[in-house]
Length: 139
Figure 1 (cartoon, rainbow, N blue to C red):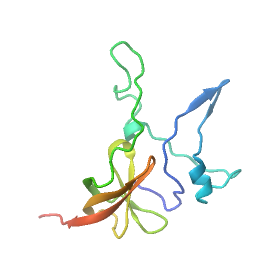
Figure 2 (cartoon, helix red, strand yellow):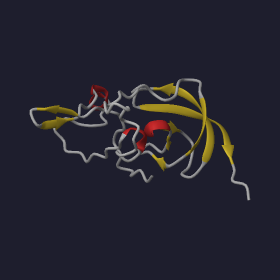
Figure 3 (cartoon, rainbow, N blue to C red):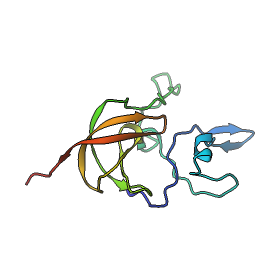
Figure 4 (tube, helix red, strand yellow):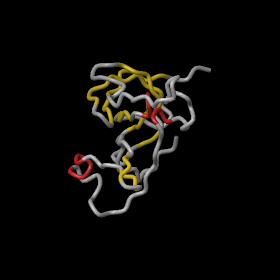
């Protein structure tokens, strides 16, 4: 997945309907951190949970009701994962995506690099990790 340099924020939000209109709530932390500015116009990229197409069959139970998804981070502090760096953020850090499209920020990495990381901090919308080891491609 190509992530443009202009990417300003990554977070999860529920789409809410009210009187025939649909709304996304922007977390206050995104405004407070100067990532986004109130009354500005932004382009959105919306992914289904897990980054899959909407018709993947995991959302409905056998009785047709819609299941509730777990919105907690798919990792916790201290957990180790092997990831591939998919992009570079505007501050020069590597960006890797893991379960449900969750983003890990990994400093001192390059696009295409495969690394084992340890999660330093897992927030609701993004995690921060440190490189434990670099993997080289065999062949």
